Amino acid sequence: MSEMPLLQQLVDALRCLPGVGPKSAQRMAFHILERDREGGLRLARLLEQAVERIGHCSRCRTLTECEVCRLCANSQRDPGQLCVVENPTDVIVIDQATSFGGLYFVLGGRLSPLDGVGPAELGLDDLRERLRVDQVRELILATTTTVEGEATAHYIGELAMGLGIQVTRIAHGVPLGGELEYVDSGTLAHAFAGRRRLMENNP
Picture: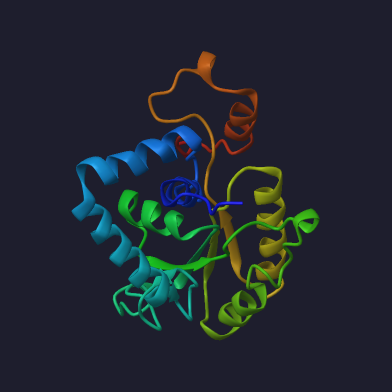
């Protein structure tokens, strides 16, 4: 039996990327080989370096080349506010889109007992210790609104409240500029449940 051709091995390797199926992987492979071999070599070098050098921050668990990431090392950020997110990409999105000046804790997933993901896999012992030692005033839960995301938020919220820490949850609902007729029922239900007073009544 002959060994699989190198081209097919390249196509199969590209399929490890999320959202990349057989056709997309084949297109990428042919593009690199026919039009941008130099770019392919640079990609290969950087990919190897990234896999070898990039690890997790010892404090917030996001991706970084250093022992402590640049956000955790920034003395201008407020350690009293801690935002819990599921993935490192969430840190980037929130930091770019908001004026949040606190710190983060990255779970690396959601509680999912059927998939073998429990509190230990999400580093919740580390989170508990950080809440206890860092004098966190407010824990902001920014997990997804999936069933697993809500269960994870509830579990962490109970943990934090047990330590006497204020717990808040980011609002979920109708997107800015969205029309109600196009909003799904789950999103609309969250929007109603999370409604707030528009203005205080005059005395």
